[in-house]
Every structure is written in structure tokens, then in C-alpha cells.
Image (cartoon, rainbow, N blue to C red; front, side, top):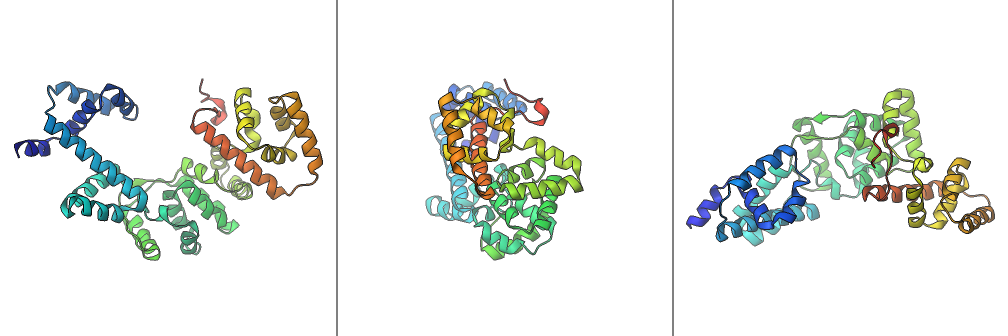
Length: 339
């Protein structure tokens, strides 16, 4: 009992230090990569002050960490209520509440957690008659692919206004979030928690626009160029479209050619500029480039929609390669090229 009492009196920082010591230096080094400099300094000092880790104490800290990891996984799978129900069955009601409370406080479970597990069409049915600010608020908290689907389905006259409001959004008070959540929660029959969270901004709308079709993307950016040219330019700087292939280095283009479907690349190049075609053909073998030209010639007229869909799939591949560090995209005028 004394050991349990002692473990319960440990601070969060002390528990973190014991956890890192238990995990070993190699794993701890990887953890440190995800922490702020201030947090690293505090944990390093705490680890230095730990003289000996009692076996029971270590076991208790590892057990608590495991429970929190499981709770977070349950929240990701089915929401907070789902996690609470599972934990209650495994650990009892009070323990489940303690873990969920601690988790939502420390990890800041984002508002509209329930909506991120809903079908975009269901959310659209609720949002389509709402004002642009309400739509922008909800889309800011959704997964980018969900938000992209909904934004693409809105009337064209509303798309640019919603995009602009997302881009210019900063912090929203819990009262406003709570009011919108309550209504949406009733529609979708789920559970959610509230918290101050920063959402929206340039990066949010860029992620959303990266997921919409090319026609919607052009409509929104064209409208924004009229309403707010500086904002439109800032958004475009952070986006990558098919024509931007000409700005990539040869190694990146060669990797893209290997990863995309030939049929998609032939369709995408069918209406591409000569500059784009040359950039791609330059990075193929002569035989492959000749075959591509033949196939494109035999293809005849193609639907613009098919071309845009092929370009969208190629851009999605490029963005995936960028996320893994296999392709480097220069953004914002090339000042942030990574070497």
C-alpha cells in the first residue's frame, strides 16, 4: 500500500522521467525529438534527479502509461463515450473517469471529435443552410479530406467565402463552439467535449483545398483573387498543383514517374504545357518517352474531367512522397528548400 501511495504522489514530470528511464536511452531519444526545448530541459533535470527506480514504482508508471495509450486508441476508434465504456468494463467506473479526464485535459481532445467519424454527406446535410462562418468553424475541425468533400459540395457562390473565413480564422471561444456542437451533436447523435482550441488559418484551408477537385480549387482561388488578392497569393504559395512539377528537381520527378500509374500520367500530360511535358519526358528513358508520346497520340480527344481526376491522383501521390521526405517541394518562393 505504501508503494501505491508513493506512486500516486508523483508529479506528472516525475512519472515522465521514470517512464523514459524505463524505456531506455534509444527510445527516449526518439521521444525527445517531439518535445519542445523547454520540456526537454525540464525532463533532463528530472531524470538526473532520479537516483533509483523501484520495481513496483516502475511497474505502476508503465501500467498507467499503457492505460492512457489504450484510452487514446479507443477515443480514436469510436469517440470519448466509446473509450469510457470500454475502460469502465476493464478498470471500473472511477478509474475510467480519471483516465478520460486526465487524457482530455493533457491531450486536448479537439471539438467536433464525433463529427470526424461521421459521413461527410451527413454533415453537409446539416451545414448547407448555415451561414458561412458556422460552416467555416466546423470544417476547420474536421479531417482535411472530410472538409474537402463538403467544401466541394457547397454552392459555388459560398465556397470562396467559406474558404476565406477558414483562412482568416484564429481562436474561437468555447461558448460559440459549444453552441454549434450541441446542434450538430443532436443531428449526429454522438458525444463530445469542449475546449479552447486554435483552428483555421492558412494551413487549414491549404490542406482542405489540396483535397478538393481541380474545378472547385480554381473557382475558390479565382474568387479569392478578386476579394483578397494577398490572401489568395499566400494560399497558392503553400499549395502544389500538377503544373508545379516543373519546379521539382530531376530526382523527384523520376521518383514520381515510378510511383504513378502510366495511364494517369499520359492523361495528365495530354493537355499539359510543353514545359511540363518536357520536364517529365526529360526524366524518362528515350524509349519510355517515345512510347508515352505514341500512347497520347492514339488516345485522341479526352474529357477534361478525366484529365483533372488523373492530375489530382498524381498530386496526391506527390504530396504523400513529400510527407515521407522522398520528394522535396520548395514553397513560398523557394526560400525554404531543404538540402
